[in-house]
Length: 619
Image (cartoon, rainbow, N blue to C red):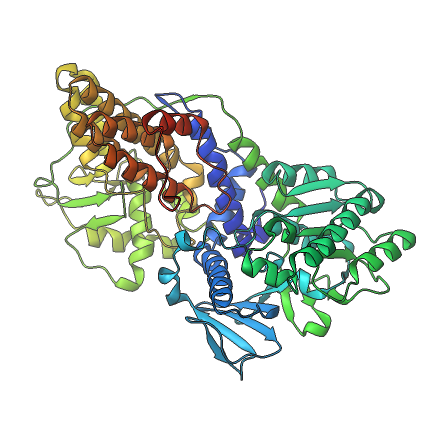
């Protein structure tokens, strides 16, 4: 099975797809029955997800999204017009906007360089950009899309800044891979709001697959003639909105939030060069001389195109008058087929029963263990041996993989999981030796990491893994009904936050092919829900609140647990705390840029519990 290099190399595209996949899986979890988990991908879908996990740069996507919205809000507050951006550079530590004309006075925390031709936002500014403060700010530059990378980072261009047609020349296969990448990123990025993307002439697999991933954004038609009436109608709507609103440009309308829906963009991406008659009509439509909340990308040498880009068979793209020479972002047919299969799997709602709990010998207590590995929250390892900080991330991942496979792992399997792009046996064995030194020996002098008689690498009996302890406590709760509440409470005390939180970018791709992320959240949610029910039956609503909160530490977006929290809080008689919880719920789920609102069952519960309540911000 070929490795999907194009997906792994496309950091922003991968982040957008992972975000969309996460939303799809939340819907699956919503339909999940007690005692079950959602369907796990297989085959090509697994390889696609591994590539997405390795490539995705969520921090860069958030910096681009929140940085641009914050800039727009600041410019509007100062009565200033947004600049025209013709290019964006995302490096390892900063976001650069190339603007024209130059302006030496960007709003803080942006800084000006090169006499105001470049506005820079450092990555260290990201923690200070609050998504909750920017919920109502329209995305100012939704047409920004990656075209490739150079030695210093990723390059994006604004399709709307062309004020006309963008033509892409080059070999058909490479050209199509560029256009597929543009379509995938536009369809799933987080720095755009509502948009329309019309695909023309692409094969049914790409068009239908993208429409499944982003049905509100994408439609596919066979010919340009089929697309032109809607494009022309949309252009006229924008002209009328500009005249009626009194703003001087689309950018100003977005910045000030005036006639918001009017500035939602429509982008056209064609698979084949348009026929001459239709091309003339498209050029006339596109060549406005001003921003019209639209962008048009077509292949071939089209007379009248505003920008003409060239890509060669080696994947090198030159962006004409913009002056960019980059390694093009390419997504080939095999790459996106795996992605579409992944999303189809995430749309399946059939139940998958949780694995049985074996029980067995009680895990070591914290006092009895010589090594402790905590997965139910940020990854933490307490081990007696030394560890070189420069190797800690790799060694921690290797240890977590072994903790997730208590039955042991063959060295070859370990290599494929931790080094999906390949490594030598020497590198693998040296890493295993470092982890062994880190874990040290148990109370009887035995290594805490060893090879069993079948050659598998295993963790010793004194290595305490919180997830294994959690499972054992849940098994005991079922085996001893009289102590069910106590055992479940002990289990939830182990939960500190989201599963494997704060893991570094580009690692743990093996999770796509393991039950861990599918089983553990389902089990924690089920235990928390069961404990809420038991404590409410016992007349202990505050204990029920604590149980719901414990589950939400690991699964903060699970609305079933939020409903448990609301019911339990309401049972305490403290209406003010119910209002606080609802505000907290709306604030949390509303941080998702493509969030469509609470589930109907949740909305109905809020109305039942607080019929006369107005949320924060509307009082």
